[in-house]
Amino acid sequence: MEKTRPLWSNPLQFVFACISYAVGLGNVWRFPYLCQMYGGGSFLVPYIIMLIVEGMPLLYLELAVGQRMRQGSIGAWRTISPYLSGIASVVVSFFLSMYYNVINAWAFWYLFHSFQDPLPWSVCPLNGNHTGYDEECEKASSTQYFWYRKTLNISPSLQENGGVQWEPALCLLLAWLVVYLCILRGTESTGKVVYFTASLPYCVLIIYLIRGLTLHGATNGLMYMFTPKMEQLANPKAWVNAATQIFFSLGLGFGSLIAFASYNEPSNNCQKHAIIVSLINSFTSIFASIVTFSIYGFKATFNYENCLKKVSLLLTNTFDLEDGFLTASNLEQVKGYLASAYPSKYSEVFPHIKNCSLESELDTAVQGTGLAFIVYTEAIKNMEVSQLWSVLYFFMLLMLGIGSMLGNTAAILTPLTDSKIISSHLPKEAISGLVCLVNCAIGMVFTMEAGNYWFDIFNDYAATLSLLLIVLVETIAVCYVYGLRRFESDLKAMTGRAVSWYWKVMWAGVSPLLIVSLFVFYLSDYILTGTLKYQAWDASQGQLVTKDYPAYALAVIGLLVASSTMCIPLVALGTFVLHHLKRGDAAPMA
Image (tube, rainbow, N blue to C red; front, side):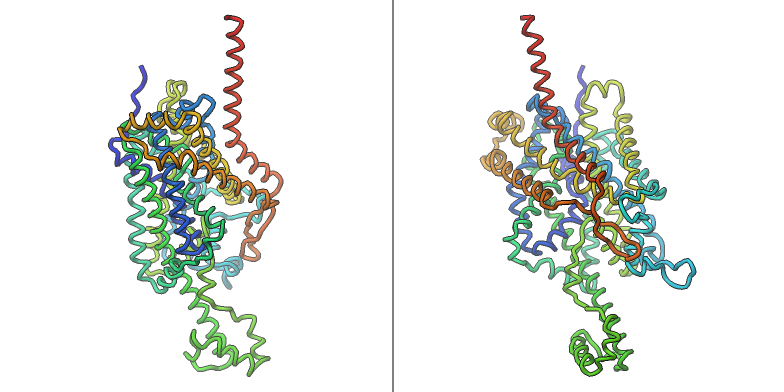
């Protein structure tokens, strides 16, 4: 007798699960970066257009497929066509799970250190002789030093792997233990956790927004964000990045959304839920950007005013000026006068005079781990009651990261538990435990001294081209293999609602063409880039330097891209050969 498929206890639980998965770290640390890079408020124009023509239709398609087929990605796509398989989605989700939980391990590490007074990244440590500050820290900054030296203990290059760092390794074990406890009993346990992981980040963001708006200089950051640079609308990269942000922030192609939707009641209104989830996801990105730019403004203003104080103090002491004489408004004028009146004396101090600019401080664009663990910590250390803000921030990062991990693991576990061969021999808890254990063991690579370089490789190359190809094949398969009319009638019979012309036009034409354009852009970008490079930490200079990837790293990058994308044609070819052989065996018998 076939097992009854477990269901979400109510539609709201499903929506919370999708929000918990879709609203992740990319909303907090990539969208603000794109706003900063591509015209501030004007970036919202291509972003909203891409949400309408790409995000909503493709999200609705994946939810509808999962709900209609009531299986994970492998079973769902095999039902649509025997030549298709969701193995590619499972492989990409496996790659993502391998490295993504390392972010949660870093968040745990920072969270544990947030209870110290003062915060360990707020000041540079003393050198071995206790005669001054550590040289590497002085050349960089206290936040950079804590990240690159204390957290990562990073090696000078990818070739120097070093050993596993036991403190990050223990944090990674803890992160996987938390994920395992959350997914232990499938939707029964995940369904309860998602209410917490989906709602708590909003509570923290609201608290941070209130605090951020009261910080000195916050308005500088917000003006920078909302001042549109309309010329960026003519920049093709702005549109490409808007489409990419929508695509990846919704988590399309991983199989997680299909897995979540497969636990829905067949009559569930997945169209409404697709619109709700995509709108909440985009709203979160914009809301998180307002919070981020208020923090940016505070940090930039603090650094700018600190720079002015240092220059003013240097000039006051050198030229015996009256205290308080130099201000931000007259500094440049006085510098010009001193340079002409005392040329020899001014030339001696000139190398030590920094060029203080609020605009250049705001122009410093940072994304990913650099934003989360360097820029934010730089701002937090200068806040009053910094320990409280640090605990809140890293707890929010944990909730976002764990919420995304629940979706990633669901994309792997659902096809495995759907398999009668596996589920008949192993209970669900054992399957979940094995998946977590294997991922954790492989993830130890990212806790080595060169682990951050491997993290960047996986983050940059494990999913981009693969996901575009996967979603393209999914869309073509539904519209032109399974048949759009057949799929439309299935949805009408399932939900009792007809599919509007808008969704059909998007699925059959606009969305596939958009994905092809993105795929061509990224492929040509990789080819035109030439030799791939990476950013390595140079301790002697206290900054990042650009280096070429070694040959074996390029081989790993090629393997990452090929192992997921080649699953699609290889499975189709294998199925064709098997069918051909079966026909050949059946012919003599006839």
